[in-house]
Length: 249
Image 1 (cartoon, rainbow, N blue to C red):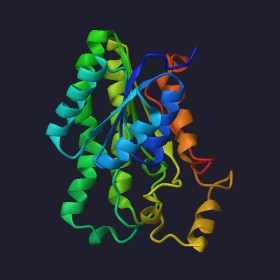
Image 2 (image 1 turned 180 degrees about the vertical axis):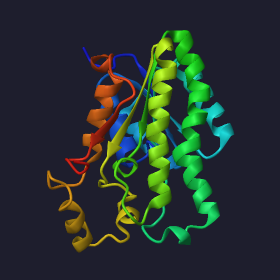
Image 3 (image 1 turned 180 degrees about the horizontal axis):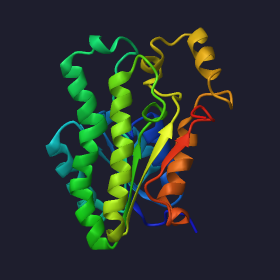
Image 4 (image 1 turned 45 degrees about the horizontal axis):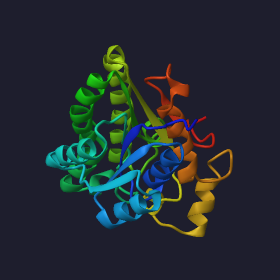
């Protein structure tokens, strides 16, 4: 039997990268998918690729009202939500922390931090009524082992990890499991910003810092998320799972 048969999953930032990988992998295992992304055309493309078990919704996670709309579409289409994946993320180009303007800092906190709070506010009551659920957040190795050049991004991911652990303890009596993923940088649209510039030399330097010798892929992250979302991980909560080829060792 598919591991997520008849489960309904909302995935933010699902129009590309890790989010797209999760959406397609979850669907392969029987889940019904809400493909949420600020990029509506990208979300529509992913939903069409999945087929009748997917619906797309344009969602800017930096805006409170967008969460109500996302939940409205989910409940009208599928009638429940079993899995909430906070995957949408934002960063700035690697560089001097003092060069980051306040407007950009506010966007980092809105997307990487406050969106987790807003998602919880809309999904937890639904999950509680259903008897349980799963919340997964895409954090980062940057929240575990910060490197220079992305200070405010690193801090936002550290916040996400702490929020995950605290939510896990508080929501356990409601049978809601809360975990996060800590990927190393991968082949996504944010890679150039993490490295400062995308050159063969920079990629080689980055790969050299990963014991398994390569960057992450969307499938790596999707498979880890799939396990956390499935009943195979029913006793796993409050975990920050490193999906990093050994980088954090």
